[in-house]
Image (cartoon, rainbow, N blue to C red; front, side):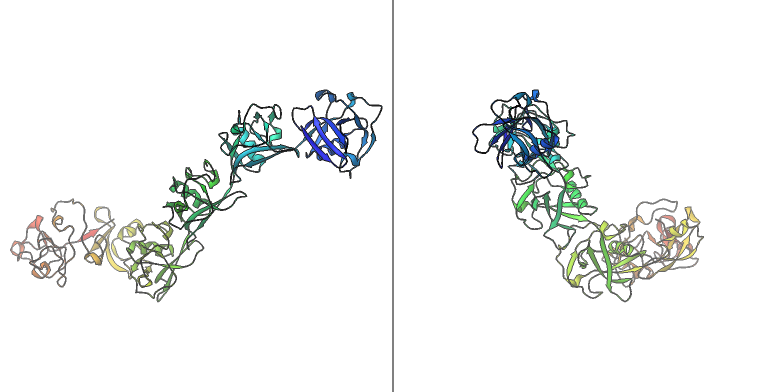
Length: 581
């Protein structure tokens, strides 16, 4: 039952199952007894006014038998209200009409007047369900039969997308009235008032069985604690709530993917708790359980808000994958210089040269629109200033941009600007003869892209399927200068015998650079002064001297030799080395 005090008296509805429907009773100011209102001259205008006084949005007149006849005085009759009337006592009426009896008592059913709120939690998205009919008192809902369909309606009425129910008492015991014993919603209703309610106040529950819900809705996300906009401590804010953090318990790369995707990046990885400093305020979530495909954190299953057993030392962080801008500074032209990168819409910074090689340079130059490039260590170009964004950047070489390389963390380094990396970019026509072969070229001399300058090489388009690069001086197939141009070959096929296997893994030796495997002899000086990958100064030496027609009586190991075919005393008249990817 609901009683509303108004200027000049008080109103209530009695006899109904719900507090918004019943026989209208009125008590004049200072009167000791409640009485009824006679329905003579009563219209829907008067019903609307009475329902608004009781805290509802509107209502309709009802037949009296549903709510029973009253007793006691009939205080008002012939009530006629105008548009500007604000209460029943401001309308025109007759006092204590003598021509009415209780069979003419006014009855109404009001609409749109069940308020809902959530209490017992710091988060506005969850809590103990409390309801209020009209402008009456707040009360709780028993959890008997209260399920996710009921939770959906409660959350929808509060402006959220949906929700799930929790165990009774999860958000503490309520106090005061237990308004509903059983709430029966289909799940499609827009408010609790549209659900089936057996009888208000009829229950067999205690406040220990108070229903609770966790609502789902948009959750705001931001990254904090880093100079780079691509990484930081994850901070979230539930709708209408305050900013807080996420505990790193169970927080993994799938959760990081969703966090990064929500703030506009392509994806990301999780970092250890506390990597980006400790947050303050609420620790909103623990054991976030995203599958990784969600578009926002609000779409992930959330067990509970705010009730965590973590400290801010465990605040989760992420490193997101997003757009990384690249530019070259300090070179003699636009195709070379110190490499500078900018994460997202952040500041420009440099890259440390630790661990960088030509694979990284290829990616930088490709992103800038060149075909390829070579790396330059720190000091070749002028030193940068500001952030040193990346250290030990790991690229495979086939990425289309720096953002696709493996980035462990932005701003984490042990470098100075003396180690700022640089590159020299270029645009060769093709990288090898196979490229020319695929475009239908015939055998001949073509430019091959070896930076910083192209070299000309003979391309054999006829032998064994074509596309062979004929070499005596090259870098494809061997390692770089820092490793002595070490030879790397795998397997052999043919009829002349494998005379290269013993040289596999050897560095390239020349007459002035002894890189062979023997400490007692300099193979290049001893055998013809040509450069080769010497194992034991034997087996093969295709860069030896041309000794003419000496046949099998040539000086041992001096000529152009292939031991497994003609032995050490036979100098070949012609030889060709070819490679093909």
